[in-house]
Image 1 (cartoon, rainbow, N blue to C red):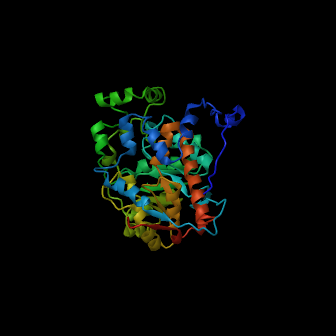
Image 2: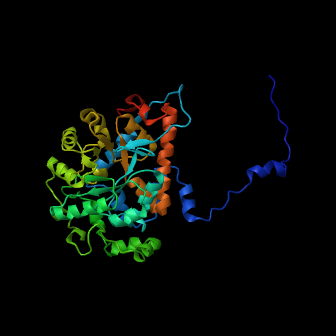
Image 3: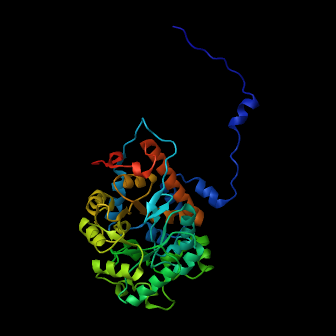
Length: 410
């Protein structure tokens, strides 16, 4: 049997040179950090090192045993996308129509309270990143930046305002008036916070706003001097949508002052007061979805608050097909709680969702790099969407159907 032989030679410099070129040194620390992040998982791992432990536990943690939070992620892990070998497309279009207006992708930045804890630029940075990405941003009632200041930071953005109904309706009306004056597009009424879920980690850490200087929190802060310096040298942390000194702006007062008996009639009242689109967030059953739409909701968000409220709550993604069928096109249907990739977004749309909301994912980006970090996460999600849609053979979102995604039994 013949054998193949090869001759050897001493390598010449011109042969080695292409392999020995060093990578350019990136002097911008934020760009260097973000360049290593190819997924939301990568961003999350890096984010954990950027903030004190108490802040991390508040953002990344869930309620009680965190079972609902784990189930949210596990449901998306069960997704199986069905590619089309013959018919793949090279440049799919991720644009969507959300509340009657075009968006670059079917993604809405969810309301997140106390956002400046993650990075001192907080809500402003998230709103500007959303504006530049062509996506809606939702400001929380418990934001650390005011309604007006966010509108000034992102005057061309699609700003939505998340509202908690207060027992004193004058407080809610004041929020609506300011949001209307500042050009906010829609209201997002959260209905799943009759009481606040038990965040065990936060309780153990003594989490509060402003941060409480216990021995444990001080030890955590000492390991993050940059974070501490930013917090101490910028605008004081407070609940900025309420007037300074208001009882509503005090930590721990939310359960006492918030409406705890929300009914469908409250949706109707809010729509009449607002005069614009109303989105109802925190829907966790077909019955409540139908009731919300019947009361005048333009859209609903299937959400268990990211596993931060009722532990063992239904998994929103698993409810999606039944709710879409029950609503029957009378309102838009969004889903949140566990969305971490463009593949998750594609699967949600394939199963009937108008779009998704993301919260923790962009907060991780904020921790890593402020506004640029949020932009990076949004870019990752949309890039992942394009790749998935290309391999599925779906040139637009309208081409996504239940044939393209299914939930495996395990």
